[in-house]
Image 1: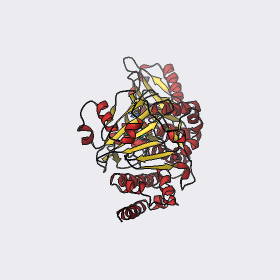
Image 2 (image 1 turned 30 degrees about the vertical axis):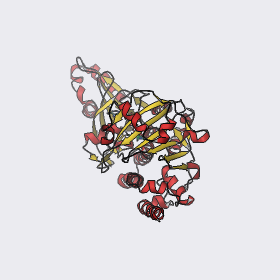
Image 3 (image 1 turned 90 degrees about the vertical axis):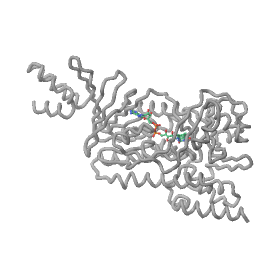
Image 4 (image 1 turned 180 degrees about the vertical axis):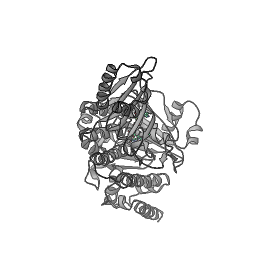
Length: 462
Ligand SMILES: Cc1cc2nc3c(=O)[nH]c(=O)nc-3n(C[C@H](O)[C@H](O)[C@H](O)COP(=O)(O)OP(=O)(O)OC[C@H]3O[C@@H](n4cnc5c(N)ncnc54)[C@H](O)[C@@H]3O)c2cc1C
């Protein structure tokens, strides 16, 4: 019974009483079942108790958004068993619909790009920034870094479902409608508890946990890792509309960022399904001071931007506008014994440069590769190999987000003093290539942006 009690202690704690009620013969049968359970997923039920399911894998991933599924794809293809736990059933709505070209490299590496290509999403060739009387276009085809010249605008219900389906086809188990409620992460093992769709507990055992739970922030909440963001609180109100008068040709798929009073701005993101995503980002008072319902507020805000009002004059909302309050969040650490955070479970800055999904895929890629090395027996330094790498990219975007809101970046964008070379270097940042250290606007991001803004400002004032 040594083996049995050992297994019970570590794997089946809630059912410890079962063997005592069995005959000796049945105890042997039970022992045999436990041996199988140790290799396969297993269900136990004692009279009156809820069914407790035990799932064993090498890696437990919380969340089946782009970060979770792309990490799962890489780890599975490296030969390790992955269990993905997702509280929703897909397709489900989520905001964050404009990709950056860097995503294409990451989807390709995860073996997921063909599944996405097959969805025929509208091609995004670049980004347009507009005021009532100024406009500047960035073409990803004219960028400094040797990277992808385009990407896609994706309705996330369809995109995330496509990725999850592709990953399931590879052989990854996704446990739908399972909500993670607890986790115990240690240097060489991890246990995660979830509530299944029937309300019964499910225990997941593995060697490591990747938390890709997005704004669910499962491990940051359980381990008290959340930090308030240093950025001021900003909220967002958005919907999908029909009746978008899109520009012709390749320009149809570009994202529009329309600048508004009081540092607020509006996005217009067109989809191939005929709908268009429209949303505002602003400090709370800007939204609160407008009267009426959320739909009225969003409509009034659209009409504050001449280019947006013209383009969206025939708009009809597809669903009532929704609001997200104070989306920015920071975190104390990205990794610890037996776990790492990826995607939005790490830090979320701001949606202005559409960096969210790119960082979700990049962090998943880097965490998966670090973890695969560890699972193969290599000694890895998570702080250096993962956190420092990801931190660099986040810092580059932080510089650009800060420079957007303090006015330095709009000065540069709308200045005719930024040379084509400089614009191509900035374009690579807007394309998500924020690890290309040959690009001075990446390597020395803070200084480069600051100097250029001063130069453009001085020349504008001459
Ligand atoms: C207003 C706004 C606009 C944005 N616009 C853009 C944009 O244009 N482009 C862009 O790239 N990004 C954008 N983003 C950011 C983007 O939404 C996120 O960065 C992206 O969704 C992160 O992906 P993820 O895989 O980390 O998390 P998610 O996509 O959020 O996936 C996490 C998954 O975890 C699941 N989960 C949560 N809690 C639990 C639990 N307890 N148990 C089990 N599962 C759980 C959730 O159901 C979810 O499916 C925007 C964000 C905001 C707020």
